[in-house]
Image (cartoon, rainbow, N blue to C red):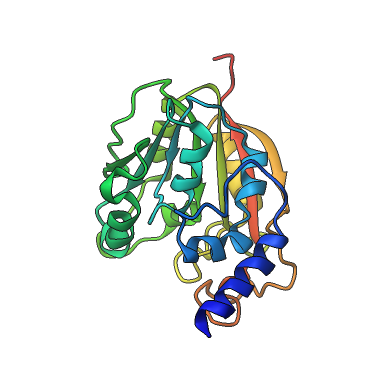
Length: 244
């Protein structure tokens, strides 16, 4: 029965996805990843931030590597995906990483276990960055977790090639709230993030509502069962200027 329900779910969710070159139905992909496609809309993300064969992409605080596996398809065998996590995140995603990368099944994905205050990235070495559901974490503080936003974004800016782009997706917060919801609700205001990124030197390329949900309750934590998996998410694409 479970397999039948799962098959129905996969068919229905994938029917809602736009056509793209990603091989979402690849037999090598896990069932949880395929189910997640309906919420994360990887085809739309790939359209918003097009990649080329041979590109080097950083999946910043990439967790278990859901997006890294899809990015690996886009950059091809001549490209490289740097799947980054810091020490504090690894206990939550370590098993997923081991399973995803077992037996070198994603030969162009390289684990990058490093603290965010000292990323081993060379200047002008990265073509693109995916920063998914992690921007608010720069303003969240807990035991073993504290990030300096300006320091991290400076490293990303330096590492990106001129014209390189970053895709930022996160849980939206109430208008005017800035970063105040990051600690307890794990949210951050889209307008604040857009303005801050431009303050860090990036140019805004795209502000997409593809993951928007007007029925979201901004007073709830993103882990609250009433909104979990259904939050209003903003999508920004920013670019490092070509003229420095």
